[in-house]
Length: 178
Image (cartoon, rainbow, N blue to C red; front, side, top):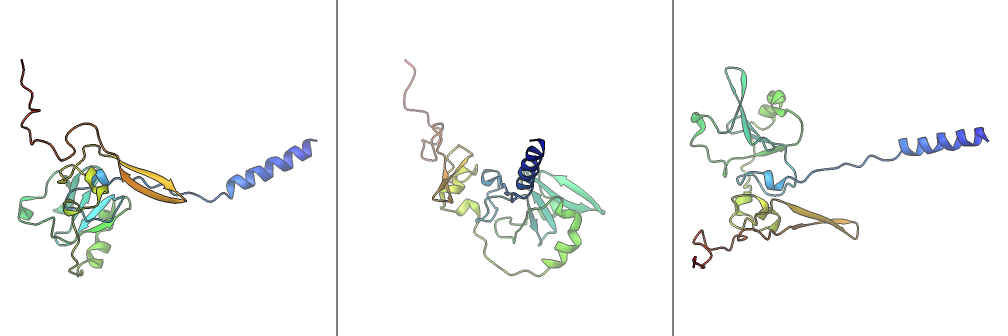
């Protein structure tokens, strides 16, 4: 009896170990900046090769070198004040601390194609309405993902709060105090 139990236990353990790993990707569209390129449900970092700078999406900080030190800042340095983030080329990097391999990315993207990357701000895709500042911002900050016939379908969760981008631009609700 004990030997049968042992055999079943080993087989059960083997099945658990051989189970294929399932990747789980968190959608962070609502955290991406308005100047980010469309087409990415998840972004950890953007590399801006024109100015050799990284942008960390979760922390909303730029990472650049000054005197061989990596600086984390909420804004670009004054020397890049005229750089247009909407028109500049951006590379999506989903790996931890890509700036530590800066020599690789600097070389790889030194010469890059002059590709037009539509910005999130200009997108008409409803999934980007969760990005604060988008002209059709819906106020929810969430994207709903549901599975339909084995495929993931994204739809924006509309908020009951706010004006869903169709409001009265701060002019009140039309009802005065009585």
